[in-house]
Length: 139
Image (tube, rainbow, N blue to C red; front, side, top):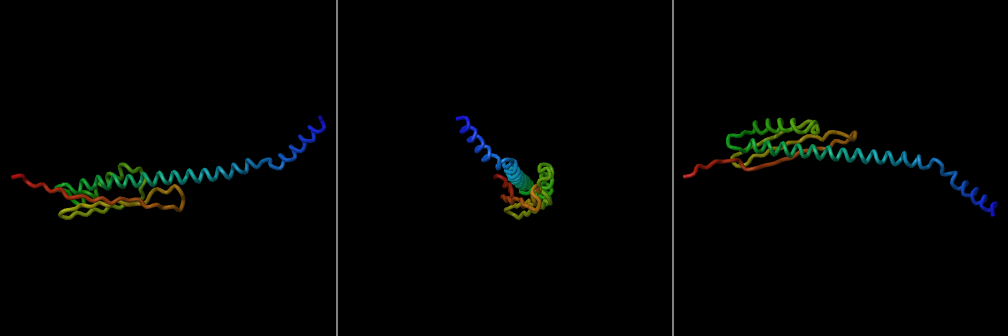
């Protein structure tokens, strides 16, 4: 009985022995995949925050450009001020375009998201429009 138990133990040891260290090699591969997934997640978050910053700046600038007495220059200046105050360098090379006619004001804010993953440049931007404020005196 003891000899049979010893033979079983030796066979089991021989089977296990060739796999030594394979877990370490697998962990190296999994770690690389997890770090890549983390970088993609951070890049997605940075892109989303840059998009949100552009949208907020465009909405704020539209309110400045569409009020009675507002102007295109005031809207562009407001967009630049708001974006520089809130974006924390998430938008690279921002561009501001504002137009206004008798009935509609439009503001566009666009740029590029901060790069987390090398060689990946994602555009961000927002365009909003609204009616120009006209005060009609009551009779």
